[in-house]
Length: 114
Image 1: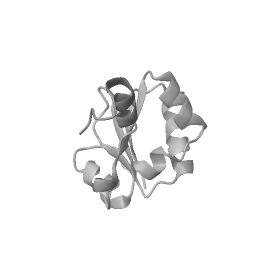
Image 2 (image 1 turned 90 degrees about the horizontal axis):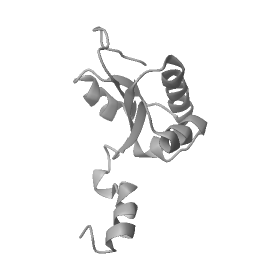
Image 3 (image 1 turned 60 degrees about the vertical axis):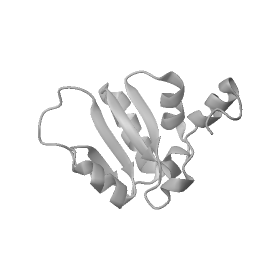
Image 4 (image 1 turned 135 degrees about the vertical axis):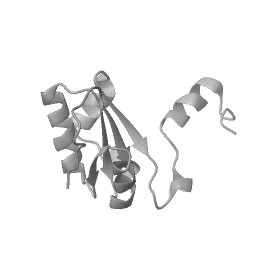
């Protein structure tokens, strides 16, 4: 199910893919949501964003963020108009550890985040 705001876009799109509970929460602030998306849907949405030349912030629930895919990997490596970031799972936010934590520890030492 895809929801878009009815107002014309004046900037970057906010796109959220994840579980229904997480995605629906973001719909309250006007995000374009894809509840219960799978990795194939992520690839489809990312490919369309690139094809359309849109600027977007794409929020992926962690299971989707770790699923990989040609477009997901490409956009993470290239940067640019489409920024992809990860959200913790709604059902287990305490288990979330963003990938940037490893980079911070590598640069500042193993105790940097304690």
